[in-house]
Amino acid sequence: MESEGWRSRGYLPHSDAPGQVQHVTFCTAGRGEGIAGHFGARLLKHDEAAGAVQQALLHFDGARYRLLAWCVMPNHVHVIIGQIEAWPLAPVLHSWKSFTAKQINRIHARNGAVWQREYYDRFMRDDRQLATAVAYVEHNPVAAGYVKKASDWPWSSAVFRTNGGS
Image 1 (cartoon, rainbow, N blue to C red):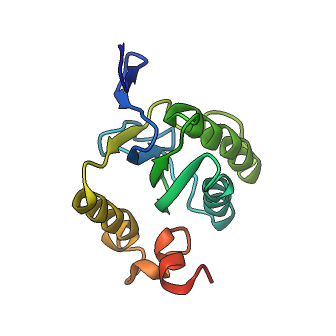
Image 2 (image 1 turned 60 degrees about the horizontal axis):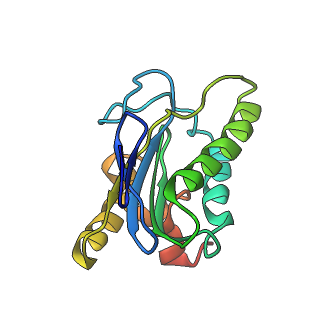
């Protein structure tokens, strides 16, 4: 399926357009695999692995996309980005997944798939939906019971928003 602003590889349809703001979720492969609420193995539960993903997200912020919010959870990642001309969503996701897969496999002394093939994306229709999505993303560790305050989770934009990244 290919039409103006939409594409698919036969799985989930994806919207893709310069200037569009997207909430993207991608999950680790393995146990519990599936996009709809069934996440994979907890490969990101170690600080070094979560930090590698966060650094990859931050690396091209402002050059290939505008990073608005993110949260690295033990088995999935939430990102809200503004798309930039000449950088479609699929290559950005491929870059993140490819680079971090090598690092995560090294950290865990393993081989094999780190990420599920597909990702889930939802474009933000207005400022209200965006604000709701940012709150959801940044409060994900609180909802999961990992921390009491969103700013206590080190692998999230909430800590940057609250303490300037310290």
